[in-house]
Image 1: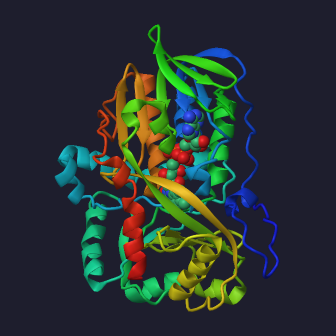
Image 2: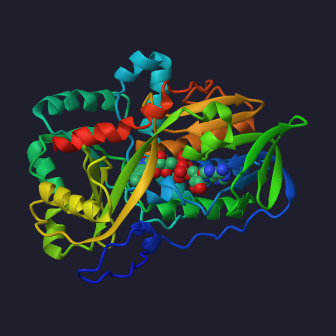
Image 3: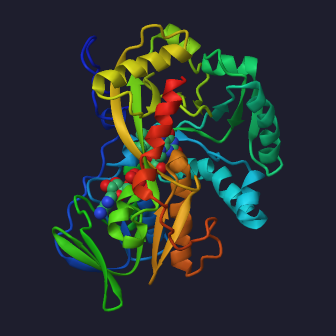
Length: 433
Ligand SMILES: Cc1cc2nc3c(=O)[nH]c(=O)nc-3n(C[C@H](O)[C@H](O)[C@H](O)COP(=O)(O)OP(=O)(O)OC[C@H]3O[C@@H](n4cnc5c(N)ncnc54)[C@H](O)[C@@H]3O)c2cc1C
């Protein structure tokens, strides 16, 4: 079902709220925790990672409570672009083996390669209303050299049974409506969705299965007391045998060992007014979504109403609402000949988190506590998979089938300085773009 956003008048400043707030199906409106309660497992965080974990725990018969500081999807999930991308950011199925060893590399490739299928299967199984479109995810090549490498990457995925192929330049230009690319990898199982609608749907499904979910309940302190985990919120407390930290950037405030394990990446997302028929015929005419591999990355997808959704990483030199709007329009004109005077209806700032490894991480905090710190660039698929796997590991008391081996957290060296790096690198990338 499509939910119609309120159309903005020409000349009106864009909304600074995500498009999804206007178009997602309503959420469950979770009430705050107002008592001291017990559970077998406590999940902290109601984004994709936490909600998928809670849903699969209750489905496996585990008594589960989830605490969310706001409402489901209030942070990275609801502010994201909604591309479902079953691909590595930095690696390929072969190079990952040199980092993790062949066995663990293959496990991670299976998890990432299957992540889009997991998302769309879950949506179908629970009839989640989130404008899901499994019409392909592409990584366009901006140079002949990358295009040549991508032909090999396609074979690496295909030999492992995935629907991935290299699309030659002519076809890519037609598929995107962009002239500058030399070809693209097409991941057939990828696509896009309304991320806020997706997480709200996961919450509804978890409630239906018997999970106890609480909103407006930030965990202010998490401690070990009497052999159990105690999480205190403004209105109550949860005592649990085991705990899953799925608060993304918020994990750092929940456990001292997680304080310096991730780096912030500020991203500006934006959505145009619905495209007219001529523009729609030229831009992504057959659907699909793409993110290129340029440092100052470019990404695009459409939603069912014809909004074109894109993003740029924040830098030190493009600051403030007006500069963001100018940059959004510049980027669209730079890529799409059919958009000479784009009208932008939404521009919103999101905060993503990246690990120094650029890989998803699970942290073992001891005493039955695990933290999910997925690398954010592919979080819709990867966090769904991690949630499913973490729930299965907890329910079966076995970590043997986890694709990511839980390890002790290692702080990033010189973290305060390192935290500036993503924005600094993006500033340099912007200067040459
Ligand atoms: C602008 C932007 C664009 C993106 N685009 C894409 C994309 O197109 N495709 C893709 O795959 N990925 C994308 N990502 C990444 C993806 O959105 C994330 O990886 C994913 O949503 C993270 O899910 P999560 O559940 O780990 O975290 P979050 O969604 O951040 O959820 C964590 C939750 O924990 C809650 N919380 C925090 N602290 C506490 C506390 N103390 N107590 C209780 N609750 C707490 C928060 O309120 C929040 O709801 C994007 C991210 C951003 C920011």
